[in-house]
Every structure is written in structure tokens, then in C-alpha cells.
Image 1 (tube, one colour):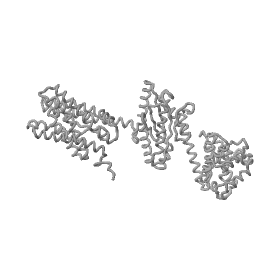
Image 2: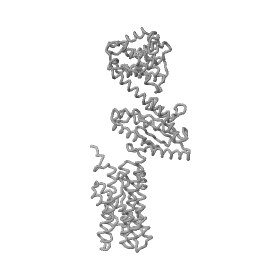
Image 3: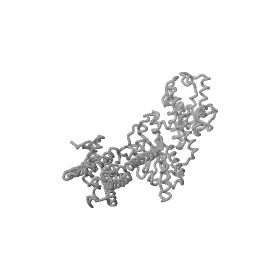
Image 4: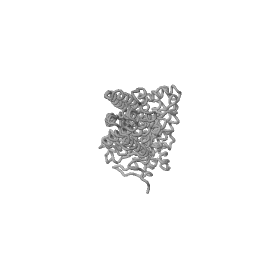
Length: 606
């Protein structure tokens, strides 16, 4: 049987740490109680101690939170613990500290492990505060300077003991480096403890002068509490103003401020830094398919990954847009992003496989201003998305074109309209069950034919798009014509012959040349007998000739209401029979070569 990973509900290391502190702190309380029992205080001393016990308990009952989550608190009871240690000695300070925090934690029903740890920790901190008196001897009379020096020294020792012990528990619980937690604790609590140190000195001196003067502490203590609460609210407001509420990364305001600071630092030191802009690929599909909660989970997971990059700070602008500022050159930044992409590929998400596209630019190598750096990184990101997504692009003026804001706006509008056109094509195919997936198959075949003809990758991509959009104009045809289970009448066929022109008109202004021309002419015949302009031979754009062959082959091999599907062999025979009249012979031969081969693209027809 294996050992339990926890003890009393706590991780082993944390339990061992609490037990160690308790093993030292709790006996110190017993020793203090024993010392008081052996030498009981006089009635006068006991009466003088009562206000300190009461005020410490009242202060511990009203701690001031140091963070928005309420996980870190500071209590003005430290004022009375330190002053008691100097005025009355370590015995009463240890008992006072243990009493005030113990009663407070029991009343507020804190877990017993926290009660034990804090009682022991406060007792040890109180013992540390009394060291000046223990080592140098008690203060006699009203020596204000000596009292003040003792109190300030005791306050420093109290702070060191308190933060040192608490930081150990936090470091083990959060699995963080101890030094990092300790320094953060000193920074966060230092100002409050410094103020309380001076208030403790004031308390001790007022008590020595006239005990009733302690009532004058009400104003300073109230001011300290207000200061702490105001400082906390200011920190929370400043954090919220610069933090994305979903991912806890910095928001666009924080990004702009950090970018300006890094540019100023780079100008001063000459050190380069890099900016990576990234988008989640097809994020809308994730939201539409799996729901917005899944999309939010994905963004949080990505933010956590980005937050692990060393020498970098990540930001979220909103939606699926992120930025990372690296205190590194572009190659080191590129390698860091590659690691994130690799980890993201292995990650399990509720939204299925997730990829990101990234553009990276460096300052001052690629830009002289913040605005120029953002444009170059954005240009690299645009290149990544236009060339298959799921990749990173280092900015290079020979590869990446930097678009002006107006050009980017036009490109974005064009992409949106093109997506709408593709959706309309899917709607066209869905209107007639007999032509389901027709456009996708024609798209795949058109690309395959272009490959056999040796066309360049950019033309192949346009053929894929042209094949997909070739029947876009059928959106304007009546259902009665589109679904007619018979041969069309002359009037109906005259309507059908208008669909290339309708499609061309819908693509006008999208900037998809020459695809719009291919859509217009994809029913032109090689001998000039086609429509809409009776072009012949080389007058017909090559893309249109390829789409015509792919369209005819798919139509012949698919079931239609007025006839059954024919075999690929029969379809090829019909295409060969009409090569030179209806079809371009070279294009028909390219299709035949493709079908006779074993290229992966054939799988799309299965």
C-alpha cells in the first residue's frame, strides 16, 4: 500500500512545515505561561495589560485585506504586540499574540491547521519583537529615545519573523520559489509594517507618559486602516483597468503601456525586443460548434500557455487576438512560439484540435515606432493566415507586405464577403439533394487537373476557389427550375443560362480576379457553341475550361432526378468524344491522367 499524498488534508511538505513551526512556537507559549505563573504580575501590572489585550483582540477581529481575494491580511494588532514586548517583556507579548490571533481564528471558524500555524507563528514573531529588551535589558523611566529605538528594532525583528514564516507556508502551498515569495511579502507588507512600527513607538511613549493618552491613538489607527483599504482598492482598480477579465492577462491598455516602456528601454540600452501577434485559427467555428463556454476555456488554456514563456509578457486584446512582447530577438521569439504551438497541438481541449497563426517582428530592426512595429507584425500574421494558418511568420520585407489600415480594412471586408459567397454556394447545393457536395467535388477536381497541367501553386489555389464558386449564380434560380425532375423547357434553360452572369455579378468587387472571369465563362465551349459570350478555343480562360471539364465529369458520375449516375469510365468516354468541340482536349487528357494515377487528391472523390 502506498502512502497517502496528504496528511490531515494537507500536502505532506506543507503539513511537515506547519508541524515544525508549531513544534517551536507552541512550546514558547507554554514557557511564557509558566514564567507568568511562577512570577505572577501585580494587580497594577495586570490592570495595565488589559487595554493592550483588548485593543490587540479588537484589531485582530478587524484585519485589513492586502489583496482582492482576501488571502493576505494585515492586522494593527502588531502595534500592541510590539509595544507590549518592549514595555512588559517577552512573556506577555507571546501570550498576547497567541491569545488575540487564536481567539480571532477560532471565532471565525478557520481550519484548525491555520489556527495552530498562526498562533505559533505570532508567538514566535512576538518573541522576536522582544529581543531588544531580552538582550539589552528592560527600559526604565521615560527614556523616550531608548524606548523608540527598542520599539523600532523590535518591529523590524517582528516583521522579519512574521514574513519569513508565512512565506514558507505560501511557497510550499503554491509550489513557488521561497525567495520570490519572501521578497513579494516584504514589498507588499513593508509599508504597512513600517507605519505600524512608528505607531508602536508612539504607543509605548504615550503609555510611559500617561496611560490615558492611548486614546489619542484612535485617529492614527483609523487613518492606517483607511490608508490600507484605500491602497488595496487602488491596486485592485489599477489591476482591473489593465487586466483582461477572462484570461487574467494584460489587456490592450496594459499592452500599449508596456510596448512604450520597452521601446524607451531599447532606445536607451540598444537591446532588441520582439512583438508576436497571434490569432486562434477558425475560432468562430469552435464557438459555433462547441459553444461559447468551450471557446472561453480554449482562450484561458492558451493564455496559461503564453504566460509560461520566459522573458516575455502576454496580452489579450479581445476575442481570439493575443500579443506577446519578448525581451528577445526575433529568432529566439520564433523558437518560443514554436514550443507553444507544439504544446497546444498536444493539449486536450473541449473545442477539438486548436492551432494558432502568428506574426513576429523585431524592434528596432523592422520598425522605428510602436505603430510601425505593430503594422509589420500584423503583416506577418496576415501572411501566416493567408498561407495555410497554423504557422508562424518572421517579418521580412522580401516576403511580407505591410498593409495600410485602409488596405487591411478592405482585405477584411473582402474576406467576409468571400465567406458569405462560399456559404451561399453551400446553400445552393443544399437546395437540391441531388447536387449535394457538387461544388466541393468540382473544386477538388479542378485543382487536380491544374496540378496535372503543371500550373503554379497560386493558380491551383484559385482553381480550388473557382470550382467552389462556379455555381454561385444558381442562388437566383427558382426552385422549380433547379429541382425539375425532367428535361428543361427552352424557357427554363434560358433562365439557367443566366447563372454564370449572376455569379460573376455577385463576385464583383471581391478582388478575386481572375476567378470571377472563370465563373462567368465556365459554360463556354471549345468550338464557340457555349454561353454566355460564345467564346472559342484560347479565347476562353484556361481556368474556365478546367472548371467546365470538372463540372461535366461530376455531373455525369452523379445521380440526377432524370437519369442515373454513370461510371467514371463512361464519363471519360463521353468527355473524350466531345474533346475539341465542347471541351479542351488538353484538359480532358489531364483529368484522365489524374484519374489513372494514385495521387492523394483522388481520395476527395471517394
